[in-house]
View (tube, rainbow, N blue to C red):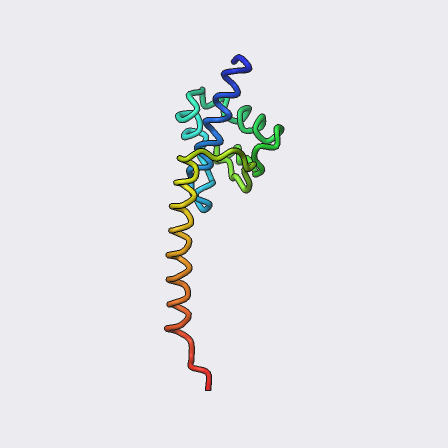
Length: 111
């Protein structure tokens, strides 16, 4: 794999992580191989390269063939990224509103 090919595949991997939700950052090697267009045997090397460049932080589960991503390095955001963030913020706002309503409905009135 050439340097440029590796860079493109790492960017594709980062895009996939960015687009996934915070709760969906346990990603199977099979999906990474499909998205990044590499052999499944090369996925771990790609992940380790991204980790060594400090682009992501997380853990690799070789037995289950899953990477758990805890952190992704912030970078330049284009309009598509901003729209994804807007959607995530709207989802978060709805979840927060539901939680507030749940607490209000289940709490006792203070006297």
